[in-house]
Image (cartoon, rainbow, N blue to C red; front, side, top):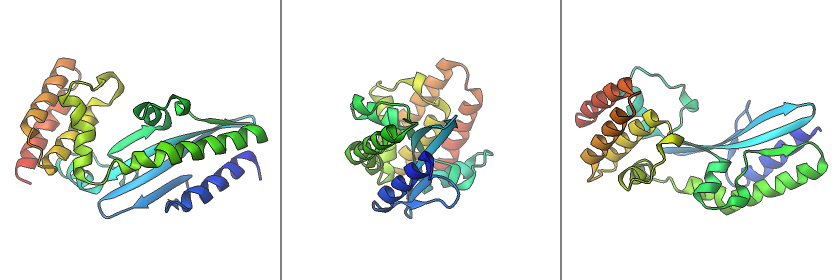
Length: 214
């Protein structure tokens, strides 16, 4: 087996022991529930026998996904849609673990292979699985999208404002968020201030009407 095959075989064994099921075609691992699906993708690039393995964390709320497809003409491709997306570096920054703040795992020999596997497993055991555990109910999605908006700690330069606004408003509605109207108005105001999201503003107004009659 080559380095890529060995790395993925080790990851298969490690994640399957945690309850993840591997996709038949892609290096992607899932835990599917009735309301939420957790996915860990291993994005792979290679050049001249050197591999770069990049872990990607995806969390899908089926409730939010259903609403998104219901009110907008944007069609999501089933399993490829996620409500929350993050890479390892961002997860490490969230948990203030700079030792894990890397873009990916570079593997080009046996030494780097063993080191990468050890570091990846340590990362997952310390904070990777905990990141998935942050999302259990729709209230958790509400906190993820809207708390930093309300306390003015959200870094708008690092997010897709359109997606965050849409997901955040849906989550707030289903979480019976007492600040629902405030959240809606805050997102509208931010999008207006930015000046690039006229279509999103129209979508949000349609979404608000849709949710009010959902």
